[in-house]
Picture 1: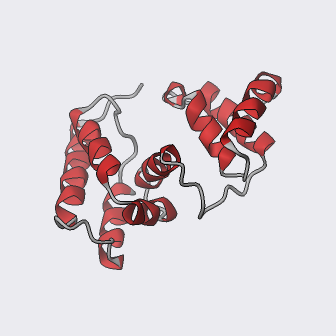
Picture 2: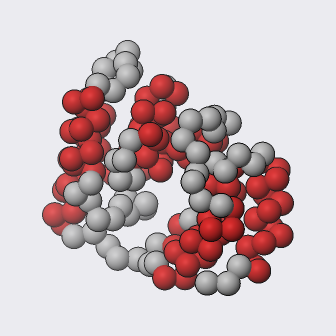
Picture 3: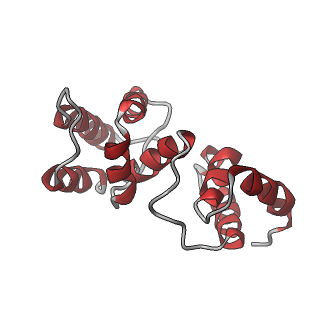
Length: 156
């Protein structure tokens, strides 16, 4: 896995600290201005090191956000945050809203290619893939069965 440069580490730290500072104690919904500011900062990042303390702080923060804030982040196009928020929502059983526009077969094909071609492909767990399949409208059990039955058969 490619490690972050010093500049990228500082940028990530600044992003995380700004994210935490932006939310009031009441955890009110994000304003459009806050979402734009988050997007401007996070979209500059190329990678995030999941073993860094900064990432762990961000993950802890995302996990305590109210559902409304998580939905705002999920529906945003903010790099990293939209995926993290969607993962938390799916773990809470909240899958309405944005639906995956890919077919289940396309999802598996893309995932398999990502796992093979990417330095961080190993970070994508089977559970993450199953959750992506639930965005196509499948139940969790159906998505899990589909994954187990079809992942090895997919050709890339």
